View 1: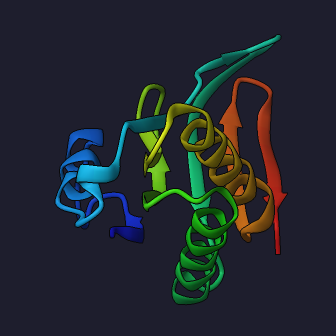
View 2: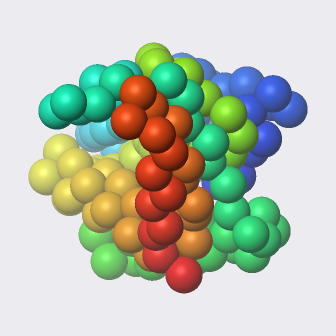
Length: 145
């Protein structure tokens, strides 16, 4: 199972890499679903054009360990077999990938629910600082912690 916080230019993963890792699971024969999510940088919001986004965390190792706990907790709660997660940190531009999740499960309903919960817990429970540099200035958004 891949669960990592990755500096943007240190390693590169695609959704296909996560799916391939899930398909190597010993539980693949019992599986009926893989759901994936790719979060990207949005360049436009109401009255706002984002030039770049800087995403950081104060303690990469701690955040990665907390991400692993989220994956284990969601696996247990929904009875899915594997969850693979990559969350990038660094400097990003419109369309850049920030966050990848893939979930392997026995059926579509619990697998999709597990994907949704993984996304929400990662967004709200982990300590990330997002600096959004736009045509209106810089906005700092803190999450989790």
